[in-house]
Length: 102
Length: 370
Image 1 (cartoon, rainbow over the protein chains, first blue to last red):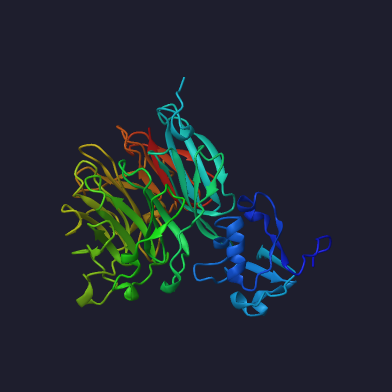
Image 2: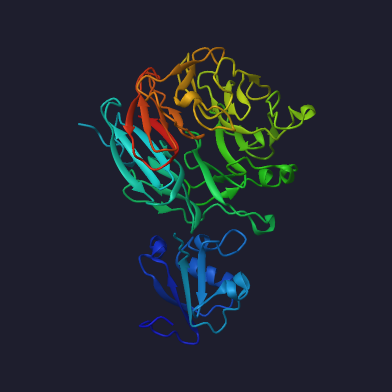
């Protein structure tokens, strides 16, 4: 968990959202939502709060966009089961764009 | 003093909307297109394939494609000062197995249907909004077209890049898809038929040079005073239809090359047609390194170059959305290059001046005269 962020309770999960999506979040980049078990339910929960936001990190088939990373308790979900990763028990979910340079 | 009108636009003002690889720019002229005031970039650093003005509502509409965050449509009601992404962006249904990769072209509907907007996307399909762009519905008939499995992408992807409404009947619509060709509906997207008769596709074997579909259409425009006349710049030539797309005739004639991307047409009773030929698909540069817009005053029987004011050394390349006419008389004509030059003409291309020499690579130019 990122230093300085309040731990979510077992019934909630702390979500950190890139400031690139501040238009959707009203400039908030950290929120607590009710615990979710799947990426799909995470998307729905965020869409309920911030309509349209899930489309920015998931494509039409529910896959995580190629240049977006979703970390669950510090681990990229691509290292787990991608969009099928079980989020039960997660304390923090971070949604960030990937960066590249040279 | 100018009176304010829709969307903070001033009466008598001409708008130039420029979509680039690194954002969108707006140029406004209040002095008869002599000088331009620029604003932007909007969507800084993000690709904007197309931006247009909806004169029914005064809104700017932008087709925005972020490398990270995917495609969306954004709307501004204050001439770009603020933007809002649509709340229900274009999405294919899950059972289709498709995902919108890019949004290519956004087209306001007819005057009598003020909330209707069309959108062309990649992979090729048409979406329609019935609420001024806030939410988008897929055209199911096109999505499920019986031939879709055989559609092949052009170099820019399998994109629906052209949407032509018909002011005589809102249910009639033409679209252009690379590399599928022209499709036509008479029932508001209930069904789609190909309209590629006599449009060459000689990248196929000899026996299949004129297929039912598979043509690499680059852009199509409609003549305003004779709406049954369409012009298209194709990979394999320039073509004209005088029967609303049922049949096409090759009008490449004396152009220096059959290859190019954009095509534009003036309004009025004897409209000039404009193209921007490149040497060929093997060398996407103007012939001999000098860029010219080529024009025809007789519907493509003869063509002539228009390059006064354009540098003699000008390795310019103009993409399919990069050449437009503003519909005034005399017409304003505008082109934007992949090296970031934006040119304008106030006299139907007889002479050109550079509006900006240092924009990011230009994807699209759209003009709207009050």
